[in-house]
Image 1 (cartoon, one colour):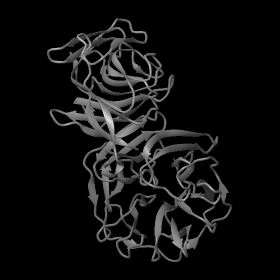
Image 2 (cartoon, rainbow, N blue to C red):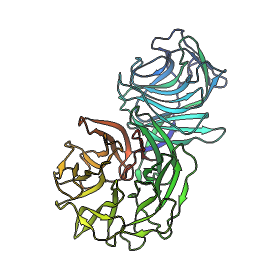
Image 3 (tube, rainbow, N blue to C red):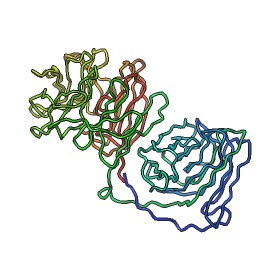
Image 4 (cartoon, rainbow, N blue to C red):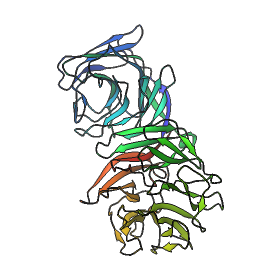
Length: 487
């Protein structure tokens, strides 16, 4: 994905609309909206009614200009007055058309302080959102880079900073970019002021000079409305959800950290000598132990266990490389991927250590084993069919059967604790079947194990590190994952 340099456009200024070309109401608003542009201080004051900008149609007042290519718009945003509805919103908006059901993406600042990217991926589709963990931003920005949309926010008088996460909307040129207001109550009008408005045309910069950003996110499988938990300039990987539902555990730069599910400051989990932990780690079914895959000792990944609060790791697998992926529901057995004699297969071993058991023998790569919550199956991914697909087998390796059959390369299947869903990550067919690289366009998908129906729950820039390990909430309602950005 190509990112950007910034060139501020030298627009011809219109006396009434400043940098914009037109304005008007969208949808069935009860009261006609209006805009006032003050050329002395370049502010836009917009008044509007409207029921909402949600579901499959919108009501708002919108001031816009047509553009194409990679662009950005930013502004200081102030909702005026006390307001009637806490969900009244002032937005920086990119729309495919001026129709109420148009595909769109916006950065919406709400009356209650919430800021989010809201989007409709296609005309007439349902609106989704990605909530920031920053409240009451003073300034906001939305960047369109290819099909990705990014949000940046500033609190107080601080600088604009990436708020984490990204969504995908495939806009066709030309599209509309501008400012919008919705009262969220069609019986009233609300007013917002936009100051220091800048529209920018974005230039391509080589990937080699970009920096990586990581975002730890949570997604409810019912609404698919994502929420940012942590945004970092460091690489974050592979979140686990604690069995009490209160914390997320992830690895970063060879170490383990934990963070409250609501967000906040991460804290280091002490792991003694283990300083090269990779993104294959997890939590025991009773919530008392951690398992890690670490390569400090020999340079090859080995599997260790330690107390959930941290401590000195105990070696379980003397042979490497070994990469942990699953813990049996009774807590007695670990399942993992290991390379032995040049071939990667699925193995199991008692959690106390001992002799390992080879469970798969197919040529190629078998990886990512994870137990079903009833302990009857181990799900894993295998490229034995020519593409990487999800398979399952009995815990002793018998009765191996293919579960997914599509053109994508499917990795890291994780059954939900209630046994109803299988979450996994899919790479495009162009990615070699035996690789799960970083920095790729991927999909998070859910398979209903009762109906065999599959749905996409998120499209993101990620891959390796996004969802390698079990990351379900204990109640099976949410998933945690990591997305990335090259900036």
